[in-house]
Structure formats: structure tokens, C-alpha cells
Length: 432
Image 1 (cartoon, rainbow, N blue to C red):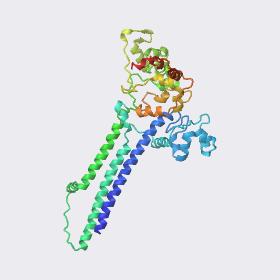
Image 2 (cartoon, one colour):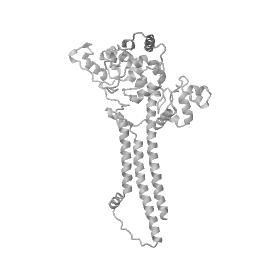
Image 3 (tube, one colour):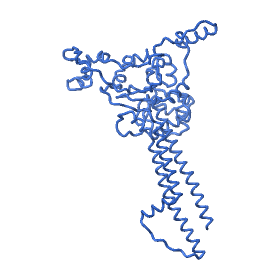
Image 4 (tube, one colour):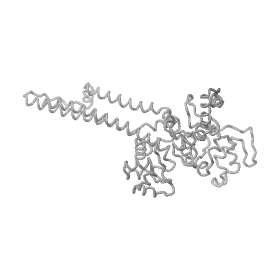
């Protein structure tokens, strides 16, 4: 019997540690998969799909639960090919919207598609109120599931420790009774005394400290990993400008307001004079009981404009203090024009954009559906590097790369090459 108790002690400790580590690893992996899937979904899927409502394509959450993972992997990877093969399930799925063909995503790896499916099943993480600062976006990314899993493992472990401790003690009492040893009954003390006795057990203290270190370490790691990642950041702006109304309903081209994105490093914030090109006449009085819209009135106030007299008073002018949404570190250099002009075709193919969608959607997401603008992509180094790894450059008939090829030919001939020939005269090379 003594040997049995020793075996039980050894086995349950090993089994418990394995199961605890498995739960932590699985919970962390699932959280990471859903998190990565959310990022990919926002980049590639939101122009046609939503989780809980029909858009160009059907609502995804009700469908994913009814389809096999094998079919979904093939469908997302290359739906047109699957339909062409005559697959009954694929043909049936294509009937939802015959006028819109499902885009193929051949560059997506099976692990990435599984991450998307994990996010669809889990759904959008709930936010604790409106995001008001840069740190709020990071807190949404910390998986409550992982932390809850760690706490549950600790509580279950304590219960198992107590139960097995009592079982071992009972077995030892039976052995002593058979050996004829007189057993002196211990007086039952208070709960506090029992807790004090428990914390005198070195094995329990070691296990408690180990769980505490793992819990705090996991929490700290997730917090540090998401530091500076502001996906979903949506500050309150001084004027409630609706991109959904302007870029979506009215279909105003991005370049009309953000002309700098196509000509320079910065996209630029449009001046209020650009707003006044329309809002001298458009005042939305019909939806405000004959009064000028309060948001349009803010534009007038900032310019010192009197709508009745149609005159400007420069003494009343004041700047609009817009809150920056997309913040890159000072050491990071990003050139808008180089991406949206030189690399436009390459980015379009990589991100699966439709011809009518501006290339801006690749990074900023479907702004034509955003009532208030928010940071759509993580803008992390990993995110940028992955795009640079996967995107295939379109060098044919591209003036930028034609210039580089010409420079290489001159180098081969031993001719003089200056920095100007390689774009060294661009302002953004020196002026940030």
C-alpha cells in the first residue's frame, strides 16, 4: 500500500503539470490564431463580407459552422477554380450572389485561413467602451480567454491537491491500522489554521509561486507584445466627418481631399477650403429643421464664414485641431506616393482589391464604410515586412523601374551615374 501511495503521488504530479501546460499552450495558440485571423479578415474580406449580416457576400458566422474545414480551405484559397471543377457545394455557394464572383486568395497559407476561420467562429472582441486613447487599442488585443484559462487551471489544481492529499492521508492511516499502530486523532482546527498549515507545505508553496510566475509572465508578455499597436484606435475628432457619407454614399475620390498621397510622402489633411468647395451650397438644412448642420457650422466657425452674408471674417479664423489617427514611430519612413503610384498594381493584386476600389483600402481598410475613421491595420514592422515579402512587383511599363533598369545598363557600360538618376532629387529623401 505504501508503494501505491508513492506511485499515485508521482503520477498525478506529472499528469497535472502536462495538462496544465497543455491548457496554457492551447489557449494561447487559439487566442493568437483568432487575433491574426481578425487582422487578415480586416485586410482581405471586409469589402464583401461581415460576420453577422449579408453584404455582397453572405453573413459568415452562420455559414462557417455548417461547412467542413476542408471545403472552406479550398473555397477561400481559390473559389473560382473550385466552382469550375463542378464541386456541388461550391456551385451552390456561388448562387448567393451570381453577379459577384468570390475572389481567389492563392497567397494565403492554410494556417492563415484557419486563423480567419477561428476569428469568424469567435467573433469580434467586445470593447469596454469607446476607445479614447492610444493604449485602449492595445488592451482589446489581450485575450481574456488565456487569462481565464490560467486562473481556472490554478483553481482546479488546488482542488486536486487537496483531494489527493486527503486520499493519500487516508491510505496511510489504513496501512498504520493494519500494522497495529495506534493512531491519535488530530483535533480539527479552524479554516484559517488549515490555510496556514497548507502554506507550510513546501510543495504547495513551490506550485503556487510557479503558477503566479506563469500567470504574471503571460499577462506581461501579452501586454508588452501589444505595446504601441493601436489597431482599432478611433479618437474623437473636433468635427464628425463621415467617410461613409463622403467616400461611400457620395463616392468622392480619396485623391480629391488627400492629393498629397499621390504626389508626396504625406497624404496631407485637406484644408477647410476644400470642404467649402461643396459646403458653401450643401448645408444639410433639410435634415436639421431648416438650420445648418452643426458639423458644417463648425467648418464655418473655423473659417469665420457668415453663411447668410456669404462673407469671411479673418479675425474669427481658428484652426481645427484634428487628432492624428495613424502614428508611425519617428524612425520609420513611409512614402505614400511610392506605394500608391509606383506599387499600385502590385499592391492591388496582393490585397485582392477590385478595380473600383482605391489602392488606399489596402492599408486603411474600407474607409467608405467607416462613419468615423479608425486605424484599420496594425502598422507594425512585421505587418509591413510580410507585405514586402509576399507582394510581387509589377515592373513592366513602370516608369520608376524603367529608370532603375536604365541606370543598371549605364553601370554595365561604365557610364557616369549620379544619385539624381536614382531618385536622389526627391524631397522625401532628406526632408521627413
